[in-house]
Image (cartoon, rainbow, N blue to C red; front, side):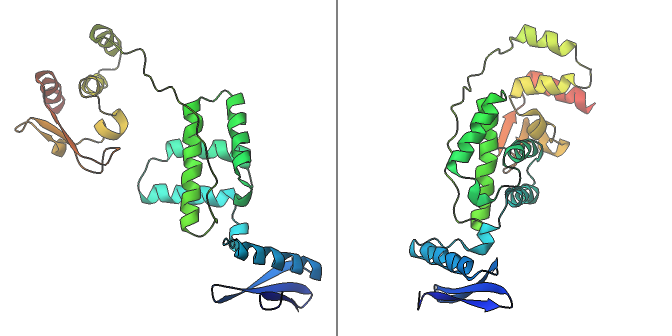
Length: 243
């Protein structure tokens, strides 16, 4: 391996050195056997030859590191953590302390098979897979993994069924606590998301003069703002709420 790298002993432990893109790398084999160091050096040279040096940092990346990165990303961007934590719990139950390098296509397929056997819906499993994909994407940008594995999602049946007719909806709302009724009446009229779009509205977002309720750019899921016109029924509900 002359010219590509070599092995040497530091104390009782054998180390390797090799050049990659003009930089000299030194790495411990963590072994007192010279053969282990030679085997490590051959692996690194093979990786360089295939254009994908893994290196010790990537080899040490655990699933727990991926989970920590995506949680941090959610907190920075002020995304809601509830659904993410559920997905990470499902993933951790299966992958446990696995190294990121070992989370391969076949193991992900086994995860899907396991979740289906547990009775999880396709949509739920896809949310878990989306979290895993995003975690790998963040780790790849940070140099913690060499590349993200291929993740194939399941087919979802997203056809919505069981819509309320007006009379049926009114009947159900009548059984709700009085302080919740205006919220659900508004949601029924507008079709906006209750938690993220309606419960976050303040009086500054409402203009009785212009006759609109506003959602600012960046607040909606698609990052686009929108204005909803106050219908007579909606105006009456909001005026009572203000009073």
